[in-house]
Length: 401
Ligand SMILES: Cc1ncc(COP(=O)(O)O)c(C=O)c1O
Image (cartoon, rainbow, N blue to C red; front, side, top):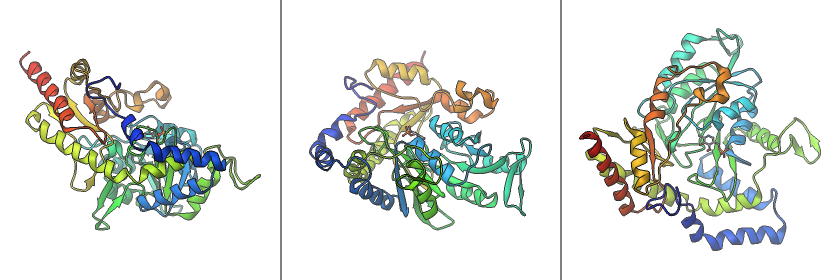
């Protein structure tokens, strides 16, 4: 992960050096106008990012976690509700559900895409819940809690299989909030609508993170909610700003969850480069897949279904000897990551939910075998060859051990 590595896991320095003059001028503009909160930098970014996502509205907030929390609350999730999501995700997905005082319930992921398995969602809703047509409400049979929302996670830059998820959500009257924190620009081909849809435009709302390492990253913290529902956008705007839509008039108890104007200005500069950066990531992914093809027996490469145009926030392979492979690559100066080593249902913080090992076998096996290889715009073909030949060396030694 360090800059001293032969092949770092990410390189956050080069793009900032390249854009230094433009980024510094954002800061200078903010200093000269003292425009630190709200104002044209925020408005401009929100308008550009909404367009980028094919959504009508974007509400800049202080992080991806807050974006999820505000979207859930604005969509009507109430304390004690059940919200369905996946366990193979960054813990923030579930923290946001818990912070909205709802209870996360997990659905296992598909073994090839690592995103929510729609068949398992169907099975949960059919076997463990009941839908009351008179009230339009779904209830979890055992706990009697209302089931009100589903949060599919567009993991590693690839969307979940949204058609069946949206169909089930419509049938059971669940709000779909996309966790698009890793998927700026990812696309999904909807057979139902016969067109490509952008991440951030498919659910009632979506949450994005602008944590520095994301495909679109701020120079600090940041996030956004996208939605095409005006009341939902208005509610998120209110919640991010102490529950007020007019200064010192507070309609609900909200949060201090705004996106700084300087970060918005920086994100607006970077957004212009995002399509090119995403394209470079896609090309790097294709090159990895070509270079790793001879190792297909021992290394599983990312699966890209025909309905998906991913943006490769991460390039994640899997190996039965993942820990050995990671150590070998580390010793060779190659940075890697594990996203994520412990699925959320087995995290200590979520002990109280009462899940056990074995409850979500696909997520659990994935967490033992997945390895994220270096991936960023600017990763060279030569660096990728170093990565893949080190993997080949390790696998050959492992096979003949
Ligand atoms: C899938 C997912 N959800 C939510 C988040 C939370 O975003 P943030 O770190 O901006 O709060 C992240 C960011 O790491 C993420 O990867």
